[in-house]
Every structure is written in structure tokens, then in C-alpha cells.
Image (tube, rainbow, N blue to C red; front, side, top):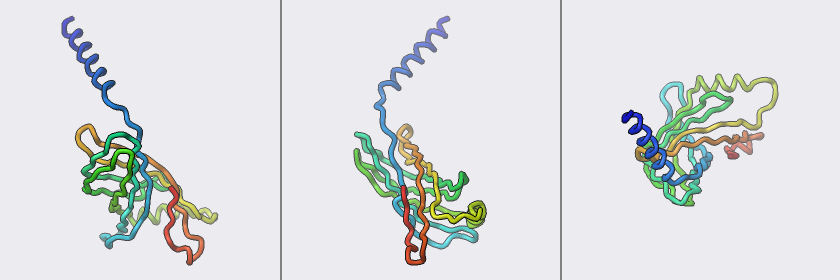
Length: 162
């Protein structure tokens, strides 16, 4: 009986402690740019994805690492990690570069899936990841958008629409 009382008491304290934590709005993460990087190993392409991170909260976000996963056509297209450390200021934003790896085999497989006879001018993507912080300060994110493909050789610059 005493053991049950202690468990209920501990649960009540835990809930009260969680209720006292400040709530925060989710961060907004979009692709700000994509640049070629160093050559990959064998059948892979390395790109530098620049993430624009917006913090709509009253507290800065300190991070010591970044992970990102990019899905295209509901399949993993690219993943990347960075041990970059920094701070996204309160009610501010930062651009964080994350090197990602794209498997050429995965890329070809997904391109074959897009070949249905219709012209492709946009590719929808979903992105997820995290800004790693201290034990209770890791911030996870999810977002989506579309890449607009160039329609003429003169428009060969990569355009990204978050």
C-alpha cells in the first residue's frame, strides 16, 4: 500500500515538473540552397545543403550537431550530419551548412520511378532532422517543399521553393 502511494506521489511530482517547463513553438527549417561539394566515394554524390533555421521562441537554441534526412517520392534520397556548433538566436534565424550524401544507385532508382511519360518540372521533398543540444534540448524538425527544375538550359541555376 505504501509502495503504491509513493509511486502515485512520484508520478504527481513528475507531471508537475513537466507542466512547469516552458512550452515552445516548433522551429521552421527550409532548404536555403544546395551546392556541389567534394567528390564522393565510388557511387555517391556529396552536396552541401544549406538549411535556414528560424526560431520563433523567446529562448536561443544552442546546438552541437545537426542531422538531416531528405526524402523524395517517399523514399530516402540523401542524409547528412555535421558536428557544427552554434546558436540560433531567440526570435532569429541562422543558416547551417550540412554535407549530405546521395547514393547514385538511389538517385537512378528514384528517377526511374518518375518516368511515367509526363514532363517533370517540380520535385516534392520532405525533410526531417534534429539540432542536437544538451540532454533535454535536442530540437527535432520536419518540413516539406519542392525543387523547381530548370526548363531551359539558360535556366540551369538550381531554384528551391520551400
